[in-house]
Amino acid sequence: MEYSNLLSDEELKSLMERYEVPELENYLREHQRPVVKMVRGEGGNGQTGCSRFGGSPDLPAGMEWPRSQGGEWMTLVAQLNLSQITAEIKDSAHGAIPGSLLPVQGMLYFFVGKDEPAYNIEHRVLYWSGTDTSLLSCYEPDSLTILEEEAEEPFLPYQVHAQARVEFPNYGYSEVYNLDDEEITEETAENYLLLTEEMGWEPEHVIGKMLGYGDGQHGDHEFVAASYLHTGKHTYNQEKDKKRMIQHFGGDEQKVDQEIDEMLMLLEVDSDRDIGFLWWDAGCIHFFIRKEDLLAGNFERTYCSIYSS
Image (cartoon, rainbow, N blue to C red):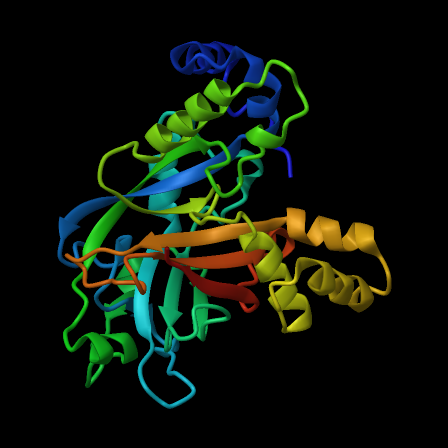
């Protein structure tokens, strides 16, 4: 999936000069992705319907807090006010997300059940298209949720705010070492990784993100998500898994490649001790969605996994 003109020529030139990687101009242009950084705000619920991680959700009448297969309350990871996010990213450095990938209004709720194993995690993503937050009410369950019970304490709410940024492939996704170009040296690759690491730390207090590149060592999150969503199976033997997907699509390999390319990271949330989130060994939790479903406002078919080093 290509996103053109995320960075101006002046911004791109400044970046290449700062990190001394002018030979990567084409690579940077071709691999930039929009990302919405979720920045920690104040602790507590804040106003009804505001974006926050942890705690309990503000739900509209008729929307039920989902339960796990075992009947326990699922744990709220995040509630996101899309009108708030739309306004905040328009005011940030790189403006609105290209192609209006995200709905511009409504509420998104992310719930998870038992987080073992780390792949194909039981979860629900709920969407409410309304804008009148006076119709929402904070709901408190009558017991700890499934992951709070495991942690033996409730997860505390923290407000979050959105900033639009641009990302380039991180360590897991980078192909700089494999570029067939005599100008690409080991120093180039080292400078590039420094670039992606420092961009990943900006702005301060980021505890999650939407879109962009998922954290990880192997850069295969989209492939795994597509494999599970379409075939219900993944073996980490990429050749066999892709063959299974090709068979699923009636031999259409081009369709398989398109599905993988258009798989988007809907949300990533880091471990955070203040909230209480600890995704295995201080990892992060991911939610993925097909571009077609996201544009249609269909959140019934998503994939959830945990990455932890």
